[in-house]
Amino acid sequence: MIDLLKRQTSLAKGLVLDVLSEGDSAVDATAGTGADTVFLANVVGENGRVYAFDNQWEAISKTAARLRAAGLTQRASLFFRGHETMGDNEALRRDSGIKAFMFNLGYLPGGNHQKTTSAETTLTAIKSALKLLAPGGIITILAYMHPEGRQEYDALSLYLSTLLNPYDVYRVETVNHQNAPVLFVITKKEE
Amino acid sequence: MIDLLKRQTSLAKGLVLDVLSEGDSAVDATAGTGADTVFLANVVGENGRVYAFDNQWEAISKTAARLRAAGLTQRASLFFRGHETMGDNEALRRDSGIKAFMFNLGYLPGGNHQKTTSAETTLTAIKSALKLLAPGGIITILAYMHPEGRQEYDALSLYLSTLLNPYDVYRVETVNHQNAPVLFVITKKEE
Image (cartoon, rainbow over all chains, first blue to last red; front, side):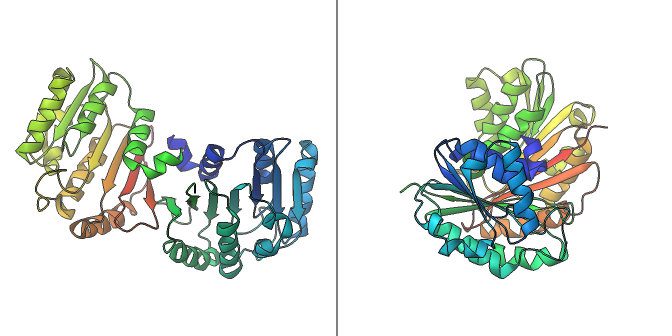
């Protein structure tokens, strides 16, 4: 269990496993190299659905390759556009069974470090996710403390502290290592 | 797993279970009503040892009664003095197998709410605990956000952020509920 505090990506997955079941839908809001997309596609099974967003073609392409290699292409819809468009996405709006959103902020691993998520688009995306999330669902957000990430983190932290019922918001962080990522977890109560 | 974020006392126990084994020693730095003392005494078993501190007689008396009811009196040493005295305690100084310290700050449940732990004595106790803790061990600290607790929390937060190797420090908190407790977790690396 201590390892989960050290490896917050594992903690995020563990928490998603708590609520996401076969047949559910899920969103990878930052497809990146596709790790979370593949994870979610495995969990929702043949009758589930995963939507993945990324505004970099390199990420969409890597994610597609990873899904193909895992034989999971049929379970996922990839959208080559930023997660700030989620609120207008017809597929998501029609799907009342979205039980999990995963955000992994910052830049694409191995990609251009100048292309990072930003406070404004991230907040837009999170607000849409809160609305689209089914009761009983979960949102995980990994935020990084590199210089560009700091402002995004501050904006996020401030916004999440204002959320009211039916949401609970938790933060898990490493206190004594500068620039360690912070995990936010949002749960939405059952109706 | 989400329930552990909601119930931080359970999370603290779960993390202690990760490292504390039969035959080890452990310290309940704030005996209070004795819940953690009994928990620790169960985990360390017949060959282990639990030391519990409290500067209120009511707490020591309740803890003693609870240990007796559980048939665990033989495994525990109760000290009717504040945890700031831990560093000078001969029993603790001679024991190289202390793998866990649990702190539950604030006031005694059901007791006088004016009698709370304070920033100064708590920091003294934490510093002693860091030294007395065996490699591979863990310290859990539940801090509360009532008005008197706020200053203690700030001092603690500042101090813990300065800790270096061999310590890792984590914080788990609820973001959108005022006055929700905060859990600090400190681990000490194996030598």
